[in-house]
Length: 130
Image (cartoon, rainbow, N blue to C red; front, side, top):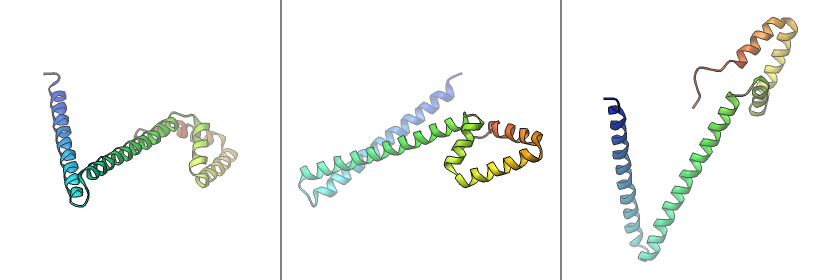
């Protein structure tokens, strides 16, 4: 059957999501009842809701920052030699300076070798960084 593996993965994802939901509800109830021991129920409910709102906000910000970093890496990977050199200077200025000096020295000594080095820099790597 063609979709058998896909159905199994979807079922496993649904089970994991259901378990995560149960854990979150149980954590919220535990936090609420623990706060009820020292605060009035309305204040305990407010603080429980606030803590979960802060947790959701922090999680969203973490994923947004991670997504921006991945997009920046993709832009650098798809860039040409000049844009990659600029990105190298911007991210690691000392390494960029050393690379530029080495490239200039190689170009003065052997222009054909400089062409091979430029070709190596413009090649796309086979593995992706995560």
